Amino acid sequence: MNGAKTRMYSRRDAVATLAAGAAGIAALGAGARLVGAGGSDGGAARRALGQDGTPTTAAPTGPYTLPPLPYDVAALEPHIDTLTMRIHHDRHHQTYVDNLNKAVADLPDLAALDPVTLIQRLDRVPEEKRAAVRNNGGGHANHALFWEIIGPGGGGEPTGAVGDAIAAAFGGFAALREAVEAAGLARFGSGWAWLIVGADGKLAVTSTPNQDNPLMAGVADVPGTPVLGVDVWEHAYYLKYQNKRKDYLAAWWNTVNWDAVNERFAAAQGG
Ligand code: MN
Image 1 (cartoon, rainbow, N blue to C red):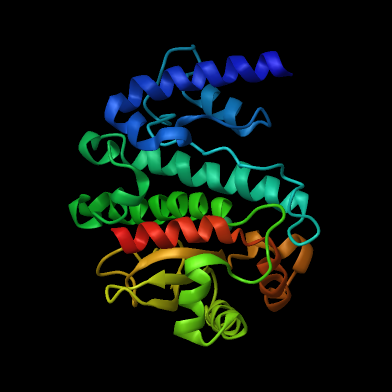
Image 2 (image 1 turned 120 degrees about the vertical axis):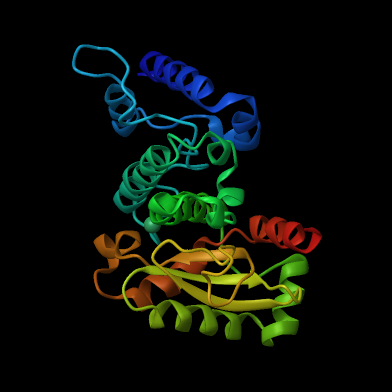
């Protein structure tokens, strides 16, 4: 198992390095490490070869790569169940990455950008590729944030500077929770609810449809830099919560990693 995993990493790393160039890899940082002996990784590697074993360009395996889940798939039990985490990360997020790589296959200048920068430059994407980059680049960036701002041992009251800012902007954590849950519940169909730092430097709650992100200028109703986001696509909760999105949202707070949210809050204010 470990041996096979190591070989897979080496293989995919090599492919990604060839495809991405130094700038892309540097921008991706730790994200360039590859995940998943669980099937999707091997599948992606296999898809890069035609039936006769020669490389094809149909399904590139880079430059974007699935960041490893920074904890075990079972670590968020009972709030988010193991199977949901496995499918959500290993399949859904992988698919956004794969489809983003297809979309930028002939766009080397854009493909050199890190995902968060890429989705802020949709105006530079040729029109025929823009929807694919918006949806799959958004999907990649949104999920990369999502895995980081939740984790084992999470939950509780907001801490640090973001805790103070939440108290100032909303009057307290209970009011923030209500606002985020209301935004998530009001989002018809699929999308996200966000806590953002707006252009005025203040915290605000908003939501986006599909895989849009508040950083997408000219797309998001309320633009800003997300410091926290909750996925309200059914794939994020249906196995455990079925149609009870409200229960999922209430339980999800028990996974929030406030240290990670504070890091994003500091970066959003600095930038
Ligand atoms: Mn999702």
